[in-house]
Length: 404
Image (tube, rainbow, N blue to C red; front, top):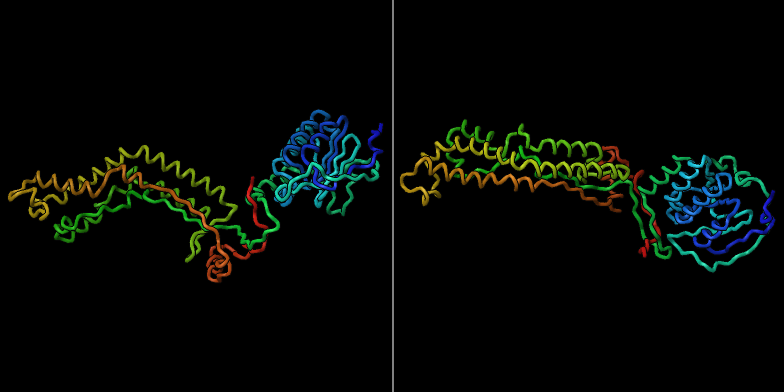
């Protein structure tokens, strides 16, 4: 039996309709709800889904544009899209997706309300918006009443549609704009990043030997021996830090591009995964710092003892002059060993100090307008597969306004 309200002319709001009024209309529905528009705000979508469950899946019909650009204006909301899609799937029905919608039509039990969507990131809605009434259109389903060119006809809103919008918004989040203030904008799909792991290559560290100790090795064989053995620790030691360096190198290989002469760049699409990988590397460094101090201390002490045994015979024969005040005229081997050990321990340093210097850094920098026009940069980027013109653009745009 047709609803009597279907004979009423529609109410048309000439201004933006606040969410509170839309919610009030939804709560008054007793039989059917039908909505066509660019999208819905999250508060309105939550109430609509509640009513959908209450009235039943056949009682509610929805057709929306579901476009990321409209979300950036504030006509719709990425979270509301996901909520509506999830609700439709749970009820065993569907939502229609229709491109190009820029006006909202809400039908409650046959009574139609027509209004403009609120661009929430640009303007606010007005509780006192004007209204006008027009003659109503007659029955048929919502899908049948949407007339469009064949290639723009309504189609089901799919999970992949929602995921695509969500991914697009994540890469380029919505921003509030002041249309009266124009600025020159440089937009790029990549950034420079300074990524480093310092202090972790413990096996590659060379300990500086005091010059007066090295000078005691008179033959070349001894000098070669000192050059190969006077390291902080051995490369094959468990606390060498090589696994940390390998992890760092793998992250660089997977996500970064080295533009020779300019720096390292990362694509915006890779930044999320890159940051997760860097976080895991930091956590690995922290675990290494906590558990390695005792083992590293033992490794340093062992390596230091080897060097002492190599240097001590020459030290006893000809001690450094600066030791004169401590040794006297007839220094013993024990006295020389003690002073040599003190010198080398100062040179080696403590395990804790070496470990606390291990640091992971990732600092981002945006490309500049000047670099966008630098042909040298463009050519260097092309060598690593980065086409600058395809991944960066400049234009005039509205300046963002502060959020309240």
